[in-house]
Image (cartoon, rainbow, N blue to C red; front, side, top):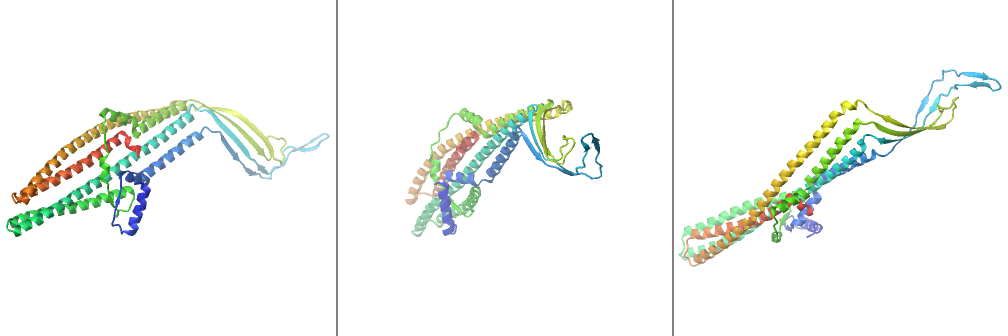
Length: 441
């Protein structure tokens, strides 16, 4: 069932049935819904956007700078102008009193060389952005598995409930038969009490199962972002999918090649290496070019000054070398190198943890598959034992305690089988999570 169709059904149920109906919920639909509403993934997406913005900021450092400005200055009028008399030219004022000064400017600049700091900072931010995207992918894997786990927990409880309800119906038939035997004088009151006690125990177990189902359903609703009053019906067909098992080394190879957290660690190691190179660049001089355009009134370069706007410009190249960095920058370099070693050790630690996790999950899946085989044999044996005892009960040639024991053994074997099947399915998904393959959803 498509998630959108499921939501329409849920809306109909909530509006017409007073929250009383069960809604079919397949595993794929549950995963899709949890991925859409996950708050953790929303946080991770915001982190990716922030990392992308930091990368774009680093890229902008390579672009030329452009600045415009304007200034106005009012001078005092208490300076007497200086004038001279020239032959044939009359009197000339050399410093006319211009009290209003306007200075609009346009400045352009570009860094030509800065020891590689800008280039390495940009590449470092790019790797950190990729690492944040991989963190999102890894947390997406966790959301998927947590949903699968919640789904399987509810599934096991529902299947147990179903087995107990069938057993209650079976014991109820036995109780009816034994009461008839009692009326006919071929059974004792004590025999009736034994069956009634067994029925009471089953009903008590069913109450606990219903309570556990409410809790598991509530947890699944929280995971899916749905009202906690919804009741789910989980299809048993989810366990019937064929599962082939490869060699343990294949799963380990997949994990080391696919795990998003391991790839993210590689990106952070690369960013740390570039940070070392960037901080090392502080040892070198920087070279910048720039140009300025002035449209001033009065323009200081014009003599004698006039109260008119006149444009002038200048351009040049600047070399700056902070000599103190030759002995102060070593501590920054040492810090960045320590961070690089830290990231490398973190990768080694994560690799060991991944190997342990894959091996543990692989062995757990093998164990659960073997438990299924044993449980299937137990169910077959319990069914045959119950058939024989039930026939003898109908012929009134068996003790009631033998019948209750056979019934209990059959119920327990059936519950063990369904739990083992669910645990095997969950163990396989856990193995996929450990290898990074569960992110296919």
